[in-house]
Image: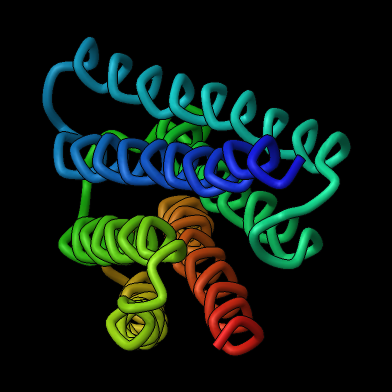
Length: 212
């Protein structure tokens, strides 16, 4: 019986890793999207669609994780933490989707240095989150995984400062009130991606502590 449970134990980690792969793909597409604003609309539309495809694909993986939780007698780590991590990875992708869809919703035609920097920070945080998730099964990688989580926290702090700077510039009289309002919302959506990454990293740290 024990041997029959082992594939399921491995499958949880494989599904979480696949979920975090979609996070990276979504973040990279969002980065290319933000960097490409002001160029051909066909490419922008294709990148928005790419983000949405990754979000839908991740939804299916999340559903697989939850289904496996319901039918598994044992889990490699606390089942509530598995569920929480899957939900938080999903939130990262939802936040990326909100950023991508906001481009059309708010008719954002051009990028800004601040928006590009925040998109880059989000991609960096998502890459580190992916590496942390993939390292979860290996206890020998515990220290490096903790460091990845700390780096995500530092990246979020940098993004928070960048958001404040970006918003303060919106109200210096250099743009219209309508432009300022829509870009403030856009920057807020970008910051939400980093907030979600930080929350997922905290869950990973809790998993590491409980299983040390």
